[in-house]
Image (cartoon, rainbow, N blue to C red; front, top):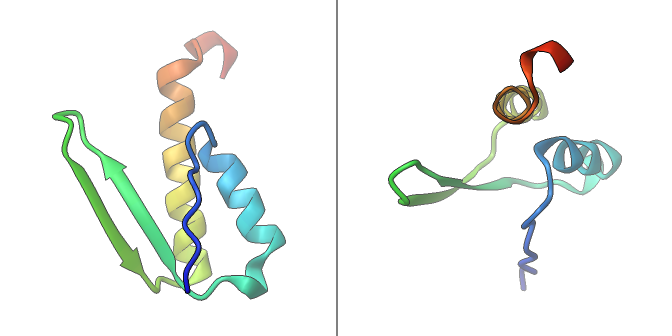
Length: 73
């Protein structure tokens, strides 16, 4: 049976690092997205590791730009 854990408070970079450390253990990826209007979309993907890495890095970059002043980036 699958185990579901909360990632609340975890940054995309932490998730990505954990994925790299446990790469051989990953069979698929489940993703939840909370949109600005409050809607939540959840799904599963069997995307390759390279694509997953790019998605995580893009999300991390977007988060950093929203939360860190431009002169600190």
